[in-house]
Image (cartoon, rainbow, N blue to C red; front, top):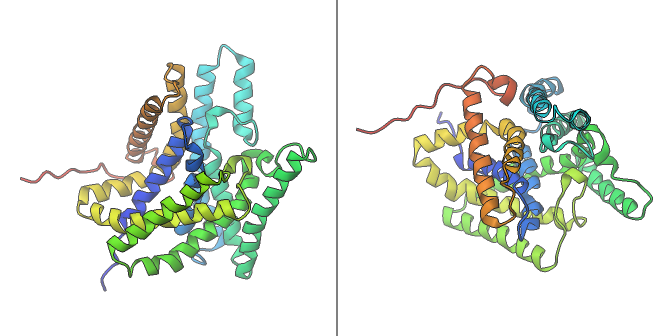
Length: 352
C-alpha cells in the first residue's frame, strides 16, 4: 500500500503563519490592519487543520498539550524571567512589575512575554474541544461561536462604561480567549475535511488562481469599507460575522495556494522539504523568543518607524528565532524548550 505524500506546502504555510506573527510585532505600517485581519485566525485555523477530530482520548490530549505547549511555555518563561532580572536589576520595582505581570498574563502583561498567550490559549482550547467531543457536534460550535458573540457583547458593554475592561482578556494568562479560539479550531477541521478534498481535484493552476482571488478580494473589500480587524489578545473579533468570514476566506485562499503551487515547487527539492518540516517544529521557540530579539533591537536604537527599518527588524528577528529553534531542536533541550523530540543534525548532500 502506497503511503500518501506529505504536503510540504501546508508545512510552509505554518511557517508563513508564524512569520506573520513576527511581522505583526515588528512594528506598524500602512495597511497593517489588513494583516491583523487574518494573521491570528490563520495561526489558530491551521492548528485546527491538524487537530484530528475524535482521534485521541481526553487524557492523551492533556498529556500531549502539556508536553508540546505548556512545558515550553513554562521553560521559556523561566528564560524570560532571567532576562528581566538581568536587564532590570537596577530598577527593582520595575523588575518585579515585569515578573508579576508576565507570569500572571492577561491585560497589562509585561512586554517581555509578548506572544506567550498563544501557547497556553491554544493548549486550553484544544483540551476543551477534545472534551466537547463527548457531546453532539453542535455543542462545540455553540461554545466556540457563542463565545465570539459574548466577546462582542463585552466590547459593547465596555464602550458603554458598563464593564471596566474585557473579561475574556483580563482572565490571568488570557485563558478566557481560549473559548472563542475553539471556533477557529473547528473551522480548521472543516477546511481539512470539506475543502481539501475538493482542492485535490483541481489543477494546480486553477486552485492557486482561485486561492489568490480568495486572499485578495476580501482584503480589498475590508480596506474599502474600513472593516475592523482581529485583535484576539484584547478580545476583539471585529464586526460580528463579517470580520471572521473575511479571515476564514483569506485562510482558505492561502491553503489553496500553499497546498498546490507552493507544495509542487518545494517537492522538487528534498533538502528544502526536509528543512521546511524541521522549521515547522520550531514554532514554540519562535513564538516565545522573537519578542526578546525585537526588544533587544529596540534597546540598540533600532526602533525607527519607516518600512525599511521595520523589514530589517522583521528579517533579523525571524531568521535568528528560526536558527535558534533549529539549534535547540538538535540539542537535549528540544523537549523542554520546543516540545518536540531531539533531532539529528540536518545533512546537506552535495551532488558530484
